[in-house]
Picture 1 (cartoon, rainbow, N blue to C red):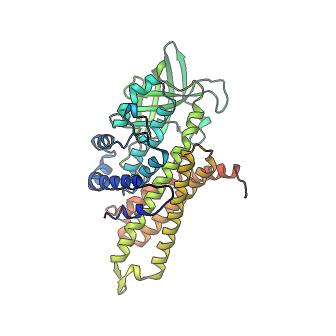
Picture 2: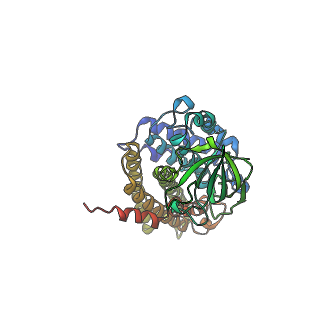
Picture 3: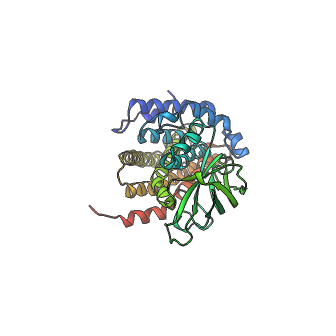
Length: 392
């Protein structure tokens, strides 16, 4: 049995045999299609389209989506199992590319798209033929969505977009962008924001630049520029001036996915490090013989598995359509900080080799750093918890 699949057999009240089978299938895909090739993707700065199309062919991109468009109509927990399993890769940029498409961008289409929009776009999205990105963040507006400045004005049968977006994952090579823009210039704060479907190649829309990052090197990230970009009126996604609420609705899905990445990376880092310290000889024995090392790893494993169970619980709450902003904010803050502690410690126990670019643990340390920043920084998440603090 593959080492990556062994922890997935841990009993949980939330998981089924089908979930375990899905994990095993993902583990085989990672071992064959990702791990042997990821170094080259890191150099080129993106995941090849043929790999994403293979995932589409296997049904991975439509797990919760309607069957009439090619989806599997599975539940939210199944999507969570998929997200965590994909995140057991040692290439965080690959996990980011996939999960932005499945959990952060395309849900905007499914949640708010008209029948005509779904028929036009969703089958290709599920097949991996059209990769998606969501463009909300701007140079001066991240978690503070109400502060966005990109604007759209109606001009006959088109909307004219002007503005810029920043830090957009999949932004360089995506085919379909879900863009937030202010459509009512007189409305204050969260009012007056709408979502638009923008296809790649539309006149007035361009990638300003590909961004160079510390980690996630095989995930393409971009600054986007809209200069009198004329978007067909039928590409308004959902209700006019209701875009803020669409973004807020999907935040919980995004943050659960980010937590799944954190838990997946932590589990992989621990696996790699236990293997390493059990074979690395120093001072007359192997490093695992040192009590301080094995006990510290044991405590990190305990905390990671505790976070994992909380992750499943939040996935279950979301699947039950319960109000779980408080719990998901706790989860995002906890997992983002925990994975950084785990990979930092694991890198330390790898010694000099842990600082070398050729080691997976060095890459995981870089890739994990963003998980306490992106998708809602730890400080923002803790404020969300504090606003809902109800001692029991």
